[in-house]
Amino acid sequence: MVDLPNAAPLTGGNDRASLTRAELVVMPDHGGARLDAYLASVLAGRSRSQIQRLMREGRVTLGGKPARSSTRVRAGDVIQVELPAPAPATVEPEPLPLDIVYDDRDLVVVNKPAGMVVHPAAGHERGTLVNALLHHIRDLSGVGGEQRPGIVHRLDRGTSGLMVVAKNDATHAELSRQFHDREIEKEYIALAWGVVQPGRRIDAPIGRDPGNRQKMSTRARRRRTAVTRVTRAEHFRGVSLVQVVIATGRTHQIRVHLAAIGHPIVGDPLYGGVRRRVPGDLRPLAHLERPFLHAARLVFAHPRDGRRMDFSCDLPDDLQMVLDELRRVQQAFGEARRST
Image 1: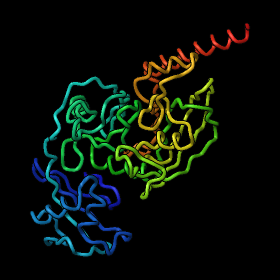
Image 2: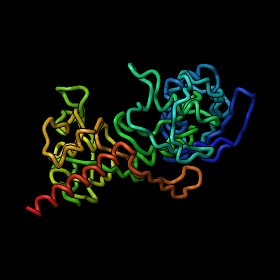
Image 3: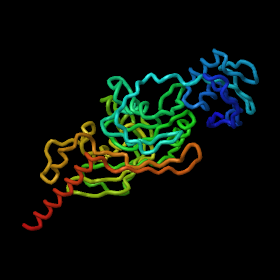
Image 4: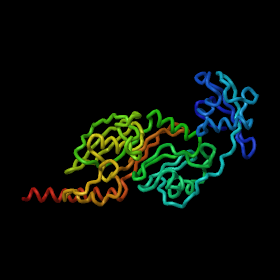
């Protein structure tokens, strides 16, 4: 049985080794939609152009007859679709070290190291999280017609921490829905300049910075809603260790929001978090080679049965070392002042 979101229960199975046959019944809330648009909305990972190609190949029927893309569907219509087996991945597997926190037949949770790009792109064709996943995970059924992991969300290259990745189309669609509907809890640990008060809520839409395409900004012309909350804070002289929860997942969101309120993340060169000169009690910060930002907790409902999945991971060694040294040095400076 094939499991597809937003559709009635499906019947069907393996027609041939290379095909899966699925039957969908159009629900009332989809009545009136174009057939290609409807199928793109319920066949997770399949684009409208891919659906149209299936129609041209005669793999889609409506009421037992070959279907056209422009046909308007009605509630109760029965649609049959032949889905070719996923093609081999175009990205090469690589035996890269990878901390797999959880693994089942539908998804995998990993603790991404800092310095690793999530998905291959220009300038980063190898050494990515996807390359590593293709090596470590052997039971991918594929997403979007290709034997590849389904990337639902991303972490910046310099950010470490938890990510959930889908192994199949149905899981990818349901996790994407949970992210879209803000049902997933994402908690980060960051070290920011200055005194950041707990309880601070930053509600500022974010878009591409018109002056620097590598940056995002709260002053962009085209912006999307973004909300960040500071839930806890530990204050040092000059910096704050903060726990941050985000309701949205915009590119660079935490980095942009903290910088926008005057508290950039320590070690973040793009948003003003690198300082050449610091007082002696902040000298451990000079050891940072990336932004002090870590995705420490991730909570979501399992796409198959709805059970609560709650994962946490400690600060990686590079950040913990800086934090331990910062505490030690600041304590020593404080004791020295009190003795004089």
